[in-house]
Image (tube, rainbow, N blue to C red; front, side):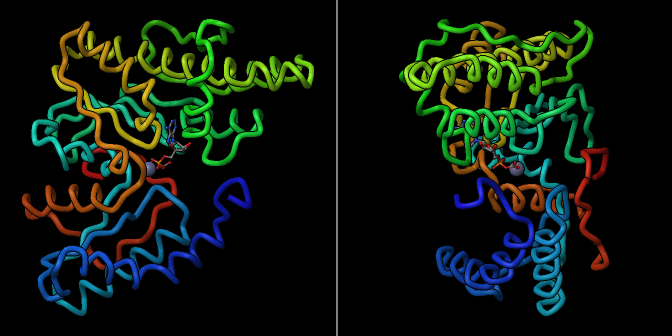
Length: 301
Ligand code: KG4
Ligand code: ZN
């Protein structure tokens, strides 16, 4: 991408330009007309206010004109329930791990709308760390897929990057120290070494992130006795992470649900999934619901 990330103003303008064609395309693909829609949902946070506003306003207008219910959905709940799109068994109660560009969360999901946060990042999100390290290594944005690809040629054990040590009781995460360690290491190399060692750096970094995630997941499973774990969010597309999570599931004996790649990264289906669950409970949102850019995950959010 030209700007090496998302430019908020350009993002909201793109939303305005694309929302009608995207809805038309979705209706055409589903083989239905607007009159068949029974309810409409949109994300109301967390996220960029301009983009949230476009989706919310469109959804409210659609609901109002068709006289159908409107639901404002928390983006993080979308990720937590994304596995249910493909795996009906991924229903609450479960332990959810959301690893995305904006969040790293370990959550006990008791039910729809009933959450207990066990741990979250104190600085960078896991995906953000992938994006920043990709930048250091001069790899394209988004950094996750680029690092994963380069790491395939690398040796995980060639370099040992530090995994942030939190107090045993704590299930929080920290990735900024790891990013700084990669930066210092990279800066200490000659131009030639930067080329020849790039794959090893990518592999060792990816390994360190996965170590940190799995260490806390292990603790959380042991602490809660959870039988089911959902791993979701953009970083859950990562093949190495999926493999180590499978390994942990085998070792500790829990059922692991990880959505297919297209349902890991941000998608509308996961928002519709949460809306469907809320509708079943007779829950809808008021039409004056405002966007909340820093919306947290809380009970009945
Ligand atoms: O969930 P998502 O689509 O958007 C947010 O809600 O943030 O996650 C995007 C993040 C980006 O940081 C991207 O680098 C990361 O997911 N990502 C990956 C992979 N694919 C996407 N990280 C590691 N490995 C991947 N294969
Ligand atoms: Zn997301």
